[in-house]
Length: 171
Ligand SMILES: CC(C)(COP(=O)(O)OP(=O)(O)OC[C@H]1O[C@@H](n2cnc3c(N)ncnc32)[C@H](O)[C@@H]1OP(=O)(O)O)[C@@H](O)C(=O)NCCC(=O)NCCS
Image (cartoon, rainbow, N blue to C red; front, side, top):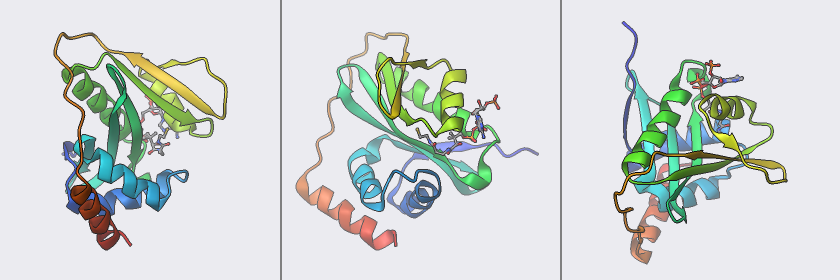
């Protein structure tokens, strides 16, 4: 029977698996950047599991602009790539952000991320016309009249706690 993937909101216990996937797929994201991202975007990080294993994740920054949600990271474990998990994750991101009331999605991709670029273009993302080594993509969402969620505010103690937890869990 084929394995059915499932998603859940990232838990701190998922951090080592996410850091490992990040390390093996996103060479431009340093360990410090990943620690920062998980501290700040934990509430908008979704983990994909299949057969009891973490196989990928996406992470969003909701505060990029009014009504715009930014895809910070999306990655699938190299051993699990080519099985449809990347498309599953991207569609999950789009659906959750549309449900939350966002009107537009954006991201930037390196020129060398050919698999990711192929995925975005096949899923209907439109390339933005701006120069540079990175490519910008956007996708409009069917508008809802739902008010956007309020910005997340993390207290200093919570940030510090997450910083220490990451250092402890990810070596
Ligand atoms: C991009 C990524 C998430 C895709 O995950 P995946 O599970 O392998 O993708 P899927 O199996 O769902 O494939 C979906 C589509 O992606 C594209 N794609 C996937 N792998 C590809 C490859 N090696 N070459 C070209 N296109 C590819 C195809 O368009 C594919 O659709 P199709 O098979 O119908 O043509 C994965 O390759 C990855 O983690 N890459 C490294 C991290 C990264 O670059 N993230 C984006 C940063 S901008």
